[in-house]
Length: 389
Image (cartoon, rainbow, N blue to C red):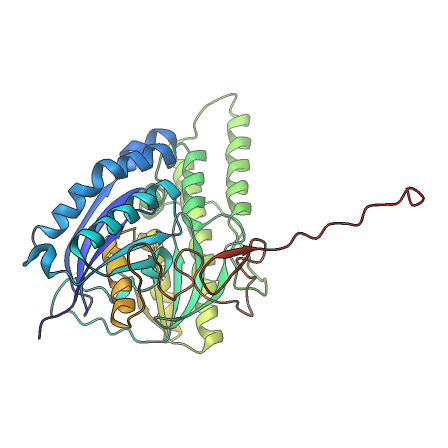
């Protein structure tokens, strides 16, 4: 019996991607066009440049993903596309492409939450003989440039939010730290490399949220502490514009140590609190070598198994979107030509309110049954009467 195959399309940020994945999670093709070189001079993603680059790349990327697949587009059972969260212009390119293909090919269309794509990325396989060994439930740390959160994943439709960042995402903090140190963009790989190669004593920083009775994260204070130390040292050096390589290495190593310790300690604490011995790390920051090593070491001490996607599937990619879409397609939970399926979390934060964390949508409103965000009613203060004034 032939397997089901899904074409996935991803365009939520600065990668244009397309991939084909079968129902077992086997990746048949995976193409990614990165925009890092376009945005590097600006120190971050520029939405206008980003959207135009997606327009230029999307057709080519899809063609390259389909080309090696036997049977071509006719053999595809459905199309899955990221609907959010992400940059509006970028998402519009991907969803427009997916809608056009679904209409012209008469294929079902499955909308996918980008964050849920990351949460299920560890199930992807690159080889037919590869055994994943991951089962539900598990604790997932999702750490990227735009999101940092911990979830309990008990099934495709059972995603429970445990904790999240209160300010900067971990990847965002890396980018800002790299800018302070004059290291360029993106900051994560550069700081990771410097920290790994540094042989001296790292600069000491306080571990964010240490000792707090919460599963949330916070990296804004750490970022500010780094910026202040750099400013103080440059001020003491009589106007020098850059620190020595030795000092940059020490600061980078210390910054990474603080971030990694915060991520690892909170994730393992969540696993122990939930009584689960399986932990997943995913998202762009999961490619960080320091995080991988420390998490595995500390988890092994507690008898907890760690599952990490291949490097290619940690950062944004379409294979994870195809697989997450596959789960909904098999369950019959999908829409057609612009109409979302029954799932209400397709474009926002996945998961439900946790006893450990704040409601991520409490300041904005809540989703109704159609997946629409209903704003909270503003509470107006009663105006003072003339006698009260």
